[in-house]
Each structure stands twice: as C-alpha cells, then as structure tokens.
Length: 246
Ligand SMILES: C[S@@+](CC[C@H](N)C(=O)[O-])C[C@H]1O[C@@H](n2cnc3c(N)ncnc32)[C@H](O)[C@@H]1O
Picture 1 (cartoon, helix red, strand yellow):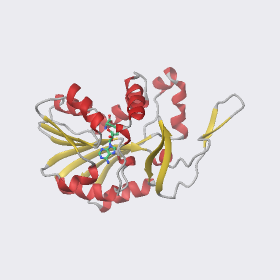
Picture 2 (cartoon, rainbow, N blue to C red; picture 1 turned 60 degrees about the vertical axis):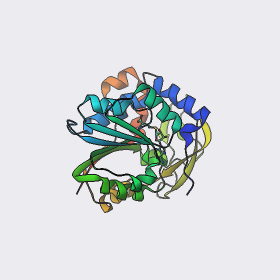
Picture 3 (tube, helix red, strand yellow; picture 1 turned 180 degrees about the vertical axis):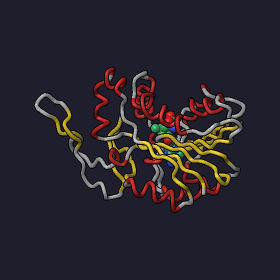
Picture 4 (cartoon, rainbow, N blue to C red; picture 1 turned 90 degrees about the vertical axis):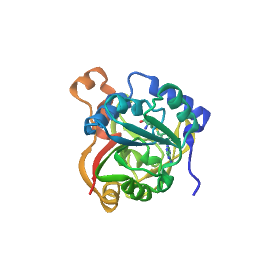
C-alpha cells in the first residue's frame, strides 16, 4: 500500500506552517484546548504521540510531567522542525508511518494523536497495534477531522444567501466510506472518510472502552470576537475521543 506523505511536499508544508503560525486558527481555538481537557494527569506517564508533527505538544507533555514521550511521524520536514525547536532528553522522535506501529517495541501509559487519523487508510490495523502497545487501562486521546467534514465530495461546500452568508453545508455520500481527494494548499490531498459509527465501533472492536466524545463548538465569547466560527454550529470541524484499553 503506497502511503501518502503530503507534509513533505514543499508547497503544502509552507502553507501549513503559515496557517499554524496564525494566532487565530481553529487548532488554537478549539482542537488544542479540547484535547488538553481530555488528558489525564501526565505525571510520570510514558506517552506515544502518533503523528507528532513539529513536536510542540511533545514538549508540553514533558513540561506537564510526562516521564518520556515518543513522537512518531512520516514527514522528514515536520520532524526536522521538531528536532530543532522542540527537542528534550526525554523526547524521542522517530521517522516512521503509524501503519508500522506493529514494529515498535515498548510500553506506553497514554497515546495521543492529533489530527492525523483521517490521513490513515488502515485505521483498524493502527488501533490493533496501538492496543498492544498500551498498558492495561492505558488511555488513548485523539482528534481527527469530523466525519461530517471528511464526507466532502467536491462541488460547493456551502449553500449561501445572496450576500454570501453561509446558510447550510452541502453533504453527499456520508455513508460511503472511501478515500477522498481534496485540495488543501495543493491538489490531490488524500483523506479517508469513515462514518462516526465506524470511528467508534472500530475502537470498541480493537479493545477500547469509550470514555468521552467531543465535537467542539464556539463559546459565546469566541463568537463575539470571531462570528465566522458560527460555521461550527452547522458542521463541526473536529471530533475528539478519549478511550481506555479494556
Ligand atoms: C495536521 S498534522 C498534525 C501534527 C500534530 N499532531 C499537531 O497537532 O500539531 C498531521 C501530521 O500527521 C503526519 N502523518 C500523516 N500521515 C501519517 C502516517 N501515515 N504516519 C505517521 N504520521 C503521519 C503528518 O506528517 C503531519 O505531521
């Protein structure tokens, strides 16, 4: 199976870095705060970060008391930034696809993965290998693009009124689970659309107990400052799950 490594595409990488450098973005307002709320006490925890990117969260986990963090990622460019800007004696960065988790040795108390699983075709395989790497009762906290977002099938994403105001989202083929090509900085970025029930049921089948599910939406305070985020009431961008190894 040919794996995508889109973050090593120069144009994609530059576009993504610029997006993340903006103070106001959906990661900073929603995904990151909600993910950190789901984390257990990290004191002494051995953490596996799946798709760690540029490693800023690996460093934060150490600052929050984790005893060791292993960050894995498929992208050389993302890992180069991680090693330059977010290295620490307690962090190990490994260049490997998470589809190869079966080859990883070790034992982890907690696995975290932010905004990566929608790039993975073999979700079931990753969950099976991850379950083996966690201690009994070990936790898995992850975020991914929400299934209502990955269901995008081309064409106009929004229906708008005469003034361009978004009225509702256009949705097609939600129940067709498939690879979807999108354009994000470059053409032909592959994501894998799975329904909400598949995301949850595959976790259960792999031996996890679901503890919490979050679909972030803006607070009144955020809406006052950034009214465009009302979009999230029509279509959540992110899905976050906290699960525990049974
Ligand atoms: C949207 S970024 C998120 C990075 C980081 N987790 C964060 O939240 O800042 C997605 C990351 O997943 C990595 N990735 C994509 N496919 C992967 C795979 N098959 N195995 C491991 N990492 C992968 C990318 O290289 C990229 O660094």
